[in-house]
Length: 240
Image (cartoon, rainbow, N blue to C red; front, side):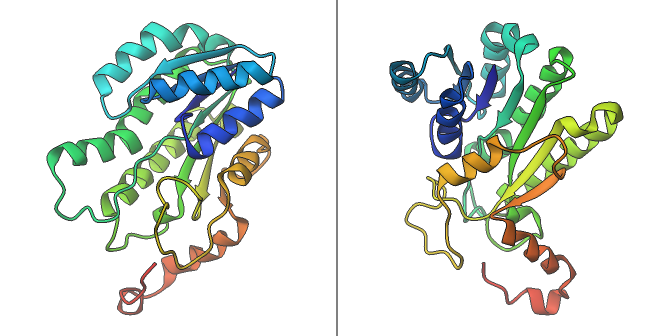
């Protein structure tokens, strides 16, 4: 059984379809329950798998906590893998409202930390966890600062969890995505090409425990690690 958090669109949705095609029972979570209902109907009409849907609003930690304990926790001992695919991006976050501030930090960091902490209490030792991150974590820039900071903080926490469980260190992975064709990038003019969410989902689904702790997709984005070493007086002129 696989748990997908952020399954109503983008990479999370494509991942659900791939997993169902491979015969996996699913728990699909998202804040958009109406979409989940339609996705469940679609999957059930094609594949002979069990599909459970849970309204899990990461923007509301209290609601997230209640629904986790009420609907998700009972399945955790049976999980083979967990995928944290949810995220919310805001390009210009210089003067955002408190509500949007809470949304960005909760969806990209706080609620993920809570869920991971709770999952580890009951998750089988053989289970596998993957977090979707972003190349925005490589180095702070003048845009999407809050989003990048939240994702980087999540990576820092996940790295700590890996260290906390050294005997099962391979059970948790981070994938830093480049530009994916999704709601986050819809209609935006980007310096580099986008890849389909289906290809990104397939990359996630085929990750193995012996793969790198942090990987990049598309792979060529790993080259951009070089920006961490560029002097600021040069880096400040970069626009991407």
